[in-house]
Image 1 (cartoon, rainbow, N blue to C red):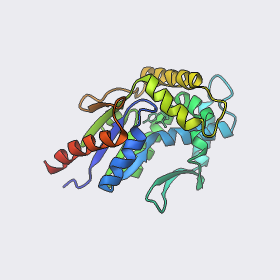
Image 2: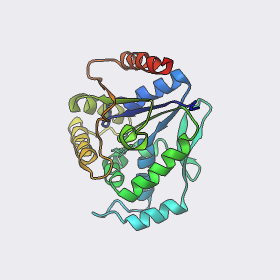
Image 3: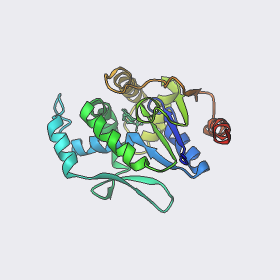
Image 4: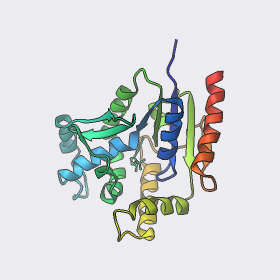
Length: 229
Ligand code: DC
């Protein structure tokens, strides 16, 4: 008998899905997995090795780097999954705008997606999870128990992201952030492999006019119904 429960949350950048996913996971005491952080960690590794400077990323070199370095998660004292590279916490390093600006390029490489797919499956094995990303309900867990698609307008998402970035990057403009999000959306939606789609059996929520708490409350009500079935 299956005694684990899988909740997937997909959506575009800065739609609020990670914040929401963490709260939903905490409510049910499930493991939260941020799949974007794996693509970000790979992009960080590529950047450290100067692979992002060229127009075409040297995929063989990057795969070789992945074979010789270890990307994994550890569970900290607050029960959060922290992403590490060779056992060093890189949570802050993967959230800078340089990584954000290049991560979609890395995430469209099919061999990288296969690599991430394996990590995603391995870390979720025999666990009840909440995983967020772009292709979680469509490709990684097509048979998930509950699937959500969290959306928000480009304007609202850009403002949210700018508010986050301005704390550490004083010169960043709202216009730059809007353009960056627009470009990332374009790559995420149009890439050939596992593009960002609304999974056909997902529950779609637009967060423009709702607080995080309102959205989480609504999701919990829907999930509870599924759990009771
Ligand atoms: O959610 P995020 O912004 O941290 O994701 C970073 C990038 O990773 C995003 O631009 C697209 C990519 N990504 C993906 O292609 N598939 C996923 N499941 C998660 C993220």
